[in-house]
Length: 345
Ligand code: GLV
Ligand code: MG
Image 1 (tube, rainbow, N blue to C red):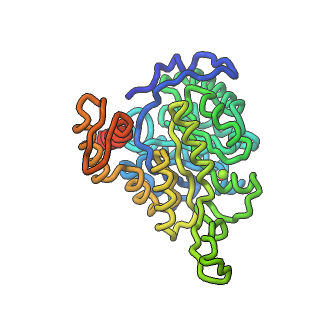
Image 2 (spheres, rainbow, N blue to C red):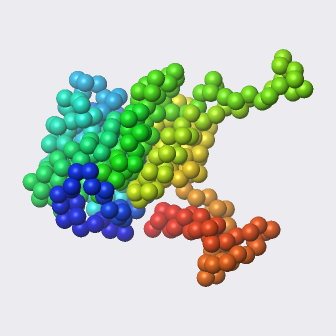
């Protein structure tokens, strides 16, 4: 699948007009691995990681100290210029960045430095704390001007982080705000703070957010099963629907308890089953989990292919292993088969 013609991106966008449904490049992005471009230890590892992870993201926003903002920006420029295979039309690993938020003193310099210097290598710009379509319109217009000035022919795509209550309320208009929109990630840490949730974690569940079984035989002091609930189900489901409506990709986001690989895998798998295509990776050990979880399993692919074969022209109903399959189950199976083919390509 190829990009739209650059002129579709550079054409003036009527602010507020719905963006047309379109095809964005279907490139695997199961793990978006974050690194700090001002941290020499992390930077040294980048060349070896090219080709082993779908996306490397140079982070300029939160987690980068104010004193290091310029060093991180300059570090990212150097890495992009000096690392073969990273980003751009022929890159084997995509190069993304997370710029500073639009209300920060650093974001204008982020964009006006990065686009002329490495705009040909940058695949996607992640914009944090997006509140509504107006934020995307601003970035879209500025990118169009900077790209035109730099003579770039390949448009840089935009990814928004859903991490404010207002952003969640406006998720539909954010997804449709520009033909550059590539996808959305959940930002559970900022979102929790903005909503005034009483948590202190980065993603994942909470032992206090639970449902307890009714008392057995009316005995309120007796043993009762406890089921922990998913704090993020509502937001992820809402994000997936908005992304599907606009033909862009939904992602889980960060899972901060690096040692708890089991809970990370559970969160990622729930997101995959609900429709997400990938997640963030904050440590190399999360890359392996993400690559595995966001790829359909061998068994799922085998079953999906059997259903496709059994359904012949794709209409009607057949019985397979005692279960009814029809046009709608075929469509679900095709999602898995097509994903497996995209990942194998
Ligand atoms: C990510 O940026 C988050 O706030 O969770
Ligand atoms: Mg955040």
